[in-house]
Amino acid sequence: MITTLLFLFSITAKRFDQEIVFLEPIGDRYASGTIYIGSDAGIVSFNLTNSLWTRFTTANGLPDNHIKIVGIDQGILWVVTRQGICSADIKINDWQTYNLLGRILCLEFDENYVYAGGDSGLFRFDKYNETWERLYTLPIYDIQLDGEILWLTTEKGIIRYDRAIERFEEITSVAPGVFSKIVVTPGYIWFLHEKQFAVYKKEGEVWEEYNGFSINDIAWIGDSLFILSANNIQFYNPRTGSFQEFKDFKLQEKVNGISFFQNKILLATNDGIYTYELFEKLHQVYNRNNGMLDDTIIDIYENNNYIFAVGKDNIQFLSKITEIWQVIELSVAFRRRPRVLSYDDAGLHTGVIANTDLRLQGYAIGEVTLYGAGSQFSNTRYENLNLRLIGEHNSKRAISGYYDDSDKQNVLYGFGYRGLENDFLMRAQGGYQQSEYADFELVPTFYSLGANVRLGYQDNNLNLQAGQIKSAFYKEYFRGYSSAKTDTLLDIDYAKYFYYIYSSPVLINKGYDTVFVDDRIISNNSYKTRI
Image (cartoon, rainbow, N blue to C red; front, side, top):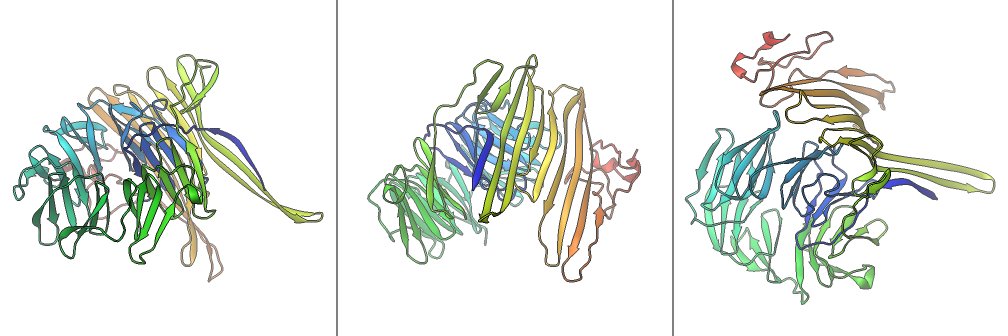
């Protein structure tokens, strides 16, 4: 087998602090197949399809490299650092920073808003008009969404925010306390602090309180809560309704982190990784004796294909298929030098256009596998592209084009433009997407083609968008014929600020009735407002 790496414009490096953030956005179609790991050296992402690493640092546009929170919402990567909060469309990497007051300590998403809590209260970002508003002024330590309720912890104790009626309510059923962490499980909502625990039981809507203890790390499976405390594991048993020490095993070495994969406990220790199957009562150890390069592990994450072990100066990862440990060394971020052609964590740069940073990011891989005997040969070819060409002006206006066929059944390509807040052309995006999947009788292929433009004038904004979805059912196995069908998008595309009010959905037909204006006054909107 001959494998050629044509070019790779991403560098991974660093030194970690104790705070590690793992994110695997399985439910997001634009980010699935990627694992994000945040640390004090920025963000590194691992592509599960081609096993390549990418890094995001201040060179890309982060406020700083000390990562506190990483989240994905509708294809947008949100990052909280020590110095601020920023976001980027993961397809075009158009990073932008938001100037909110104070430190941001927590982040949450719903269908219409992004919520950020911190020293200066609770802020809400409207995804429709891309503006922030301040909802609450007291410091917020953590927020978690459960149904229609947004739970918050403040210096006054626990507060619930009903999103439907937009009302805050202080919880008086528990003693006031400064809870630093909220954990939502299927049947419980936990509010944790080393001096005091409170839990809300959804069934019966009752509150209970427990004495607190030190918290080094937290993990849970179902409604069972496991807290790493002073090298011991305290276990909440939902059957008994009490905490007890987990005594199935006892480790002598220092334990730094705890996590779960299916029914297996994973412990990151100073002597490698310790795993324990809860039901089978089986344990396994990974360290230098069986392939690891470093025994001191700060935190750990496992999915169906890999185990990721984060250390002080590296990330070790085990492929469950090959059973081979690999490692990426982490160091200080690269800084590019001013020259005609240079590179850093953000990609390959050139300054051939005045006042503009033109950079190429991504990778291109070609692989050829030869089979044969004697003079007869056959071969298979594999090519993989994930490239972005970004031009960013000194004014911070940026344009980007991208092509990504990492997933051959979900090919993406398009462009994006980001202007400034007071520009007439604030934003423009367009793209094409193809996806295939197997059904019981059919193998349908979906194609999506669309674009949107956001215009602004003084305090007024206008969003224009158009799109089409085609579905081609090109093979029916059991009946032996092919067919095709085309559907178009519905008139409405927003959950809250929709364009028309009517009793049943209406499809857009070919013609000129797909141009419309929304003044966001729902009582005035009807199908007659079409232009």
